[in-house]
Image (cartoon, rainbow, N blue to C red; front, side, top):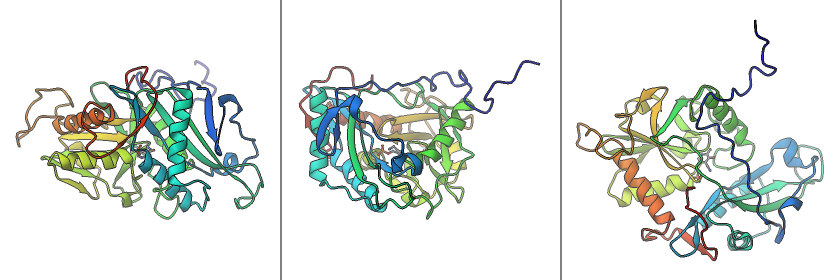
Length: 349
Ligand code: PMP
């Protein structure tokens, strides 16, 4: 008998080919820390910091897109307001205003001259006391930016599963706070999906209703109507979710935020993810059950009984979203904050 792998319960490389590609962080020059730009390599924390032991951080993920002229951050004030909201839930006092935080993001991008890019603001409880009570640990605010590509793999649509892990139950870990500690649950979802050969997992909430992916919100289309779980289903208040809803309504579609049972995914015409990293990602199959005709986003697919094409609504929302983000369509909702950096590479490279 061949010897057992040393950690047989851990990651099995090569199971899901596309998705498990490593994405090392590409260092830039500066990181914003408590009001100053410091060298990337000096943005360190002590191992005895409160956050390391108790997961006490809140953070954001934001994209800056290339434009025909320069670059622009997508929905910057909304992201920074969510950061302030996450901090408020955890009684973390951030000594900066919304405007100051937004200006800091622009400053760090312009200092690093890297765009398109992903922006990672993080607020954490630093080095002070070892007790669980965070009182004696200082609040540290960092903002980094770096180049980053596509997050959810799957050219012709993502193959996903329903996770055996539930999303956070209400009144345990607050799902509306984008807290570092929530991502322990996300990691379980993501690792299980990965090891079983899926690109992502969708978690149910504690009542068995659709909640969200490990890092994405979920949308379902059936008979021309768009559905997405309510925030009360333990889903994050995604900025891309909000953008997709606004775009869909602008395009004349009905969007319903409501409880969604698992099996509704199997019989949907279309299913898609939204997220800053994932953008608008069509889903091809759930638990190996093919969604629609399994060709989301391919023009000319078979028409449904109601007369629309498979993947059509996902494609329209995705096109409008990327069109606005890349400055190719009018910024009709006022979502872009320009930064003075010429885009060096295609937005979704
Ligand atoms: N849910 C979770 C758990 C996430 O981590 C994310 C990514 N921030 C999302 C949803 C999507 O949110 P957004 O569109 O704001 O990126």
